[in-house]
Image 1: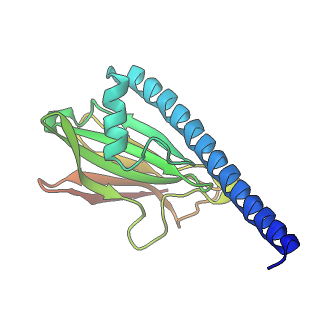
Image 2: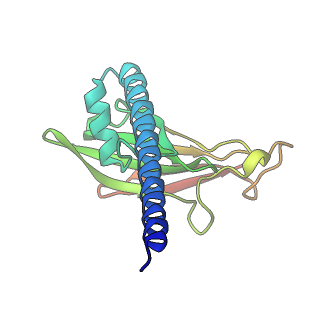
Length: 184
């Protein structure tokens, strides 16, 4: 191999390594950015629920949102309404479609364990908005221990899932099951 080919090859390898280094640093910076976003989110939800930020972080991690997971976060956290059963409602969002994941966690000693999760309307699509054409799904727990999913309408006020208005889940002793679907 000639000297020129060796230099050209070495430059190609250096360029490739530099590209890999830049991509790695960019990825690390993005991860750090999301870690900071999640920490701020933890503090917000801690304040709203009377918990420590570290406790909210434990709940978030148990719900599947790691410290550096991009395009995700907490949409709702309710540590009060299901407390009689030592359960916490965690609603997380992910992606551009603001898709919701509804998780109920049980407190076991000092950690949390997932006991139930819903990601879609039974037999239909996920809890995601339809781009700019609809509002977002919202989820709440009630003092009676129910979980209610409010189905959005489109921007014109039309129902996007037939006439479905709300889905109510009730604890049956083992898991949450659909107990009612309200229509408009």
